[in-house]
Length: 309
Image (cartoon, rainbow, N blue to C red):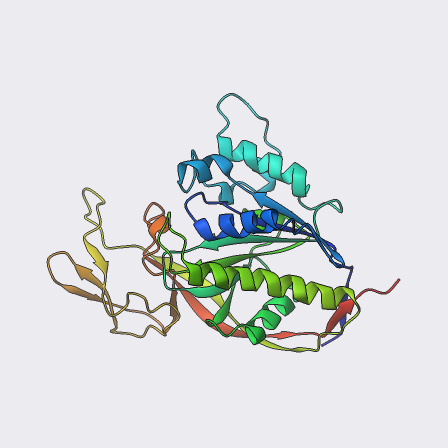
């Protein structure tokens, strides 16, 4: 592949508390603020508690999901008395860290999340970006506390709805399992190490190091599966089967049990072999998602380095 070069990544934003009951990011950001970690070598760092009202209430959001409010349409919508708090807050963040799609936006935005599912350490990318995928490759090679995986959403930046899309480059760090409203030391340490490794990589990149071409594995979401429901009331009639629970990223094959009905019947999987993600994620009940199904791909990366003047 042809070598790729990028401008220096000198302005970085680390965000936590986008969902107010996901505690790890909030505490990573507060610790960085306590240590006054706003400048390290060639990197200037802005730390942000994204949704302070939801953090104070220890709720995912107050009116609507902040991490769905960063579309071009919502960021440019007029503010009225009926505008949800999270839309107002998204516009405030866009002023602080963006504007989205502009040259004034931060060079890299990293948004920290938790999941109640057994996902380990995941980096989520909304589109192919050689720079951030090289960061993932570096973190994956350095971290030993847990498997590190990449999820590629294939959403164009103009259509991306999540906070990390405000930066010129961006990704979300998703770490679990961790219950809502709880902070676990092992999960905190995994997220903090991923942030530290990211900054470490940026120093090397900005200093002129070349990162050689290579390959990474990533998961691309194919579809989502809802819980079995009563056709009249729409109430769920089954839970995740014990043999599927906590087996995120384990290949799901025809005939494998996926649900156990409340009356004791097993529902088996029908379809092509795919990988389940975010199994029984608490926040997905309202979205009517029991789990996602994904394909595993191998992505070739070109060598990259910083642009020389």
